Amino acid sequence: MRTLVFIILFHSFNFLFAQSIAKDRVIVLTDIEADPDDTQSLVRLFLYANEIEIKGLVATTSCWLQSSIHPESIEKIIEAYGKVQSNLTKHAEGFPSEKDLMALVKNGLPKYGMTGVGKGMDSEGSDWIITELEKEDDRPLWISVWGGVNTLAQALHTIRETKSPREVKNMVSKLRVYTISDQDDSGIWIRNNFPDLFYIVTPGDDYGSATWTGINSVIKGIDNTTISNPWLTEHIQQGHGPLGAAYPDVAWGVEGDTPAFLSLIPNGLNVSEHPEWGGWGGRYELYKPDFSKTKEGHSIVEIAPETRAIWTNASDSLVRYLPKMYGRTVQYDSISHQSDKASLWRWRDDIQNDFAARMDWCTQTYEEANHPPVVTLTHDDKITIKGGENFTLDAFESTDPDGDNLSFLWYNYPEAGSYQKLIKVNGAENVHQAYFTAPKVKKKQTAHFIVKVSDKGTQQLSRYKRVIVTLTP
Image 1: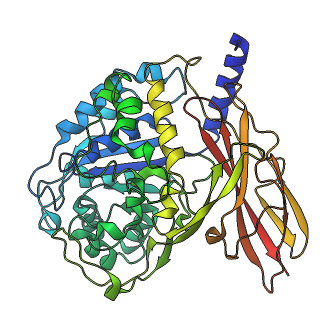
Image 2: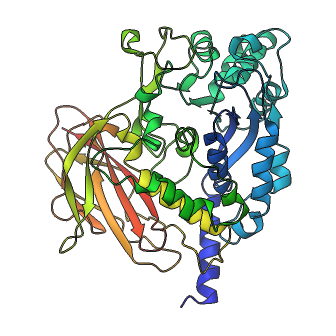
Image 3: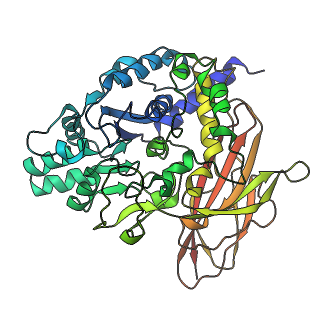
């Protein structure tokens, strides 16, 4: 049985730990009401509002919603959040008030794409982006785009027309964009006119080729239960208070917009400034995609060749670890997967379990609910090893705020580093201390190693640490 002192100590530790991590700030552009998935993603976003600093919620258009915007639908979800906010604060510090979130709801123009960009096209939403960029804040400003991106395009247009070249460069350097494919024709305009802008996108309108669809793709050979309708009913929609009740049924694809902010959640794995390292939002590489391989999909967005490098699809080769009934608790799957979607859905069960646990926070006491483990290494998270030498990685000091038993899983993530051959664990992967042999290299290389620490609570929660090993000749 947990004692009061135990709970207070862990509350204090978690608060101090959370304060030591700088939150990513984000403005969301959403074509809410074009598809129920925007509403679904808002429900999830607000459950992480203590760990991501929401700076704006802008109602926009898209190719699916060309002449209207629906800020009232954002406000409806905020009202539901407001009814559970006090209970959420029993589990973690920093959840904003309903009033504070309401003040962040802004309007874009009810115009489609580039018809809403140019002289006289400023909106409450585009002005808000500029105001946030002008603040004395060293942190990047993420624009999480769930629909059309013309509100950002207008902000950039106005910045270029009213600021000095030096100011333009400085403001653009602060921006980070993750857009769920191209849902209007202003995306390619932005990329062509602001070639230095950090931009994550699968270009064109072929959603089937996009990394973000890993959040809701039914993958052959794996258990897809956590994106099923019965799972959503049980763990999200029903019996979890007003916020869960506001989560709509799936109409097209579940939470297609959620990947645009998943990598901003501080979980020990995500490093938002490094999309090439991989995380909950997928893995992306910086290159100029081959226009001839860009497929047409089913929307009206015109496909055009990219004129610059963008952060876009990157393929992962994945053999998963599966639970084993007897003996060592994990084993390799017999099936290998290779795709850009694998860079996202490899974490999907962890993502969904985390969502379900936070939804429990809406109604349960601290003692009733589950909380994520705290992963602690006994060494630095960046080390240098000479090729051919043995080395040890250790997460012995990891703890759980609920006193749950912990499971460990160590593995190499080849695609995240420059050395892209798999480096296997020598012996057991599922203990706190893992042993490796550094491969011999002809030049300096990097290799990424991940430890996943999971509790045995309900829902099972996982956190990670990433160790970057520099391999030298």
